[in-house]
Length: 374
Image (cartoon, rainbow, N blue to C red):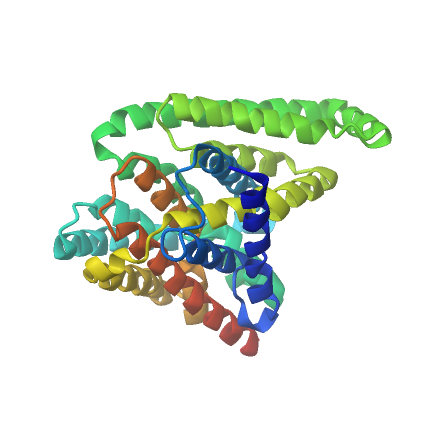
């Protein structure tokens, strides 16, 4: 990978912010980045080669950091959200049961054998997408707290479950790896809590800020990469490493300075690079050879919206059911891991992304409707 290629990735990645400028459209930044990658990658001009080792490695680093940031966005410390966990959990479980049935039906209809994978995709939510939409629209109230709890539970559960279902032949090995990574993240939580309670973290913060050492950022990245190394060596996706460490940090409370530094690194460099790389990796031309997967993508997208809409019978407003259905991290992780392990059929990765795009579009419209009804 050359500096010219890296410059091209950064330039075309600006398509994300350009498409997201109009706030009332509620277009996620990652949508433009994925589209740009597709145009210059395997789908379009083939200028970007997603299999180039340096490009692929930087994409993995961006993937780990993106999932870490997504984990820090889960509001685990909010007492109001904890009070809404009961209803949120009930709704997440209801969606999960319906998703299992629909996932089996879709796998049978399209003869892919990926019933468990589809079930996880259909049941998933995206805290990284749904919560910013809620904040940008200024939505408040008990139903929003219950939505937040539901999304946080579903997002966490599906990210943990994905490595186990995507490669069922190695599920046992993946389960052991997932336990190891999760255990390390739990230990990190207690270590961080001790450092916070003892005041040592504050002393390091003050020294770092005064001397411009960025110690907290350096340590955070070192721990993240160490967890990613453990994940890869134990045959677990780096997605779990990043997300579980993000949850541990969220449980303590991320320092604002570190949050700003991570925002600069992730949203300004590695995050866009990851999504451009992922877009360049997906070959939408395979839809021409396998048009049936267009139907699969639409079925996954609208199926996710439909399964989440069932919580309307549990008292959730209909627009909020669509917000809960929006997906990002889990489909992206499924495509990333599935293509790396060659577990998906030609055209299937594009179908998974298409399904996620359908949920994003529906969530954007639902968010605008919910804001009008305030």
